[in-house]
Length: 180
Image (cartoon, rainbow, N blue to C red):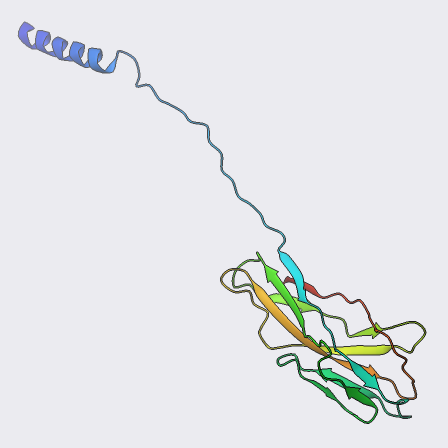
């Protein structure tokens, strides 16, 4: 190899060294963080309480017979199995039970747990039994926004041979909504 080639190759190497530096290429680092929010709950509230409205018990319930009052879960209409013993008064403020869930995962099937029966009481009067809480077939799957609206009706049972006095009969009960 001629001296001219050596000189040319040396000049090229010197130029590369002056542009890129004589040592290894420098690296930069960034410290960063990854995050995820785990949501373990959602909001579940009573929007409208269940209220059977004003009812008149006209006499002692006949022996051997229960009288029922049913509130339709879809329409809110009330019916009685015996209007001669338990009459429904108009304009009594009757309302279906409305429960609303929000901030749940979208399109998620939920499980609703309701009580079999609830005793409604006032003073020393006999209990009125509430049973057959029925959902209005709106479904139990959340929508695209993670919301769910549940509407319920139920049945009241006035027991045979009992005499019901005046007053507001109440009874607490729990409805639980959970992921399937």
